[in-house]
Amino acid sequence: MSETLAADGDRTVLRMERRLGHPPEKVWRAVTDPAHLAEWFPARVEADLRAGGRIGFDLGGGHPPVDGVVTEFDPPRAIAYTWGDDLLRWEVRPRGDGSLLVLTHTFADRFGAASFAAGWRMCTGTLTQILGGGPATAPGRADDLHEALVARFGLDEGTSEDVPGGWRVRFERQLVRPAERVWAELHPDAVPAPGDAVPPGFTVPEFAPGTVTEARVPALLEYGWHRGDRPAGTVRWELGPGTGHGARLVVTQTGPHDLPGARIAALTAWRAHIADLAKRLLDTAP
Image (tube, rainbow, N blue to C red; front, side):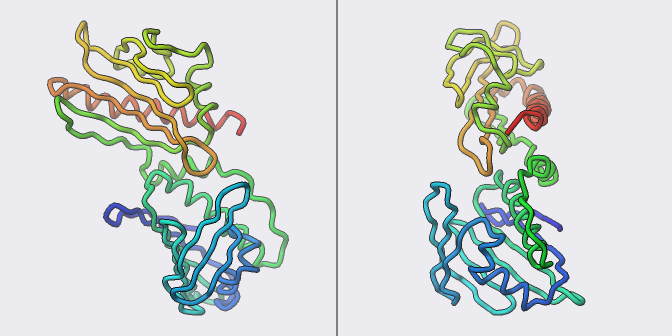
């Protein structure tokens, strides 16, 4: 299995390829027939299999159904359809005595890419088992795979931009545990309140924290940082809904233009700190 990630304007394109030892006609049925899709696809599918036809997805578990439209239907070679705001395209190519299955998934949430790729790898792994005639084993979780894909796709890197009065560094990271579990890993003690000392889990040694200015467990913690006796900027942690089974983390730090070295230090320090947090979360129960 191979995965690549690319940008297309403000959208992200995930491309995945999988070699299958089965003829294209067999693979085509598996990726288009709702009865076959029910064995490996992440949602129950109802489809009017023609260009312009309606396609519907039911994830179950209390999730609302999602509608889409078939945008391409070229049997037995390619099918594409929308799933909400996303676009999925499956292509089946002859390859030797088998097939090459190519998935192109286009979406807006770049930082969900590792979740999408891990999920599709697990789904197509189940598809491979079913095509081979064997029983499909439950895939379980893919937390380690998710973290490996975060690194491969560069989703652990921060961004830096100029803002009025200074600069802002920002990290966004999909995590594999819910917000409550993440918060407990960062600060298992009493709930912080404005004016309290900043819990160490939310700090890095390179920047001296002031006191908490805003806290909302388990979603938000903000504090000021200083250089010497001078207030220099803010650090803000936010935990919200994400893809997969975990929370989406956003960490931002602001600082003044006359401390450009601090901007560089922030990119390095927060990348290492968030990577360590993500690694520790892997060792906690789901």
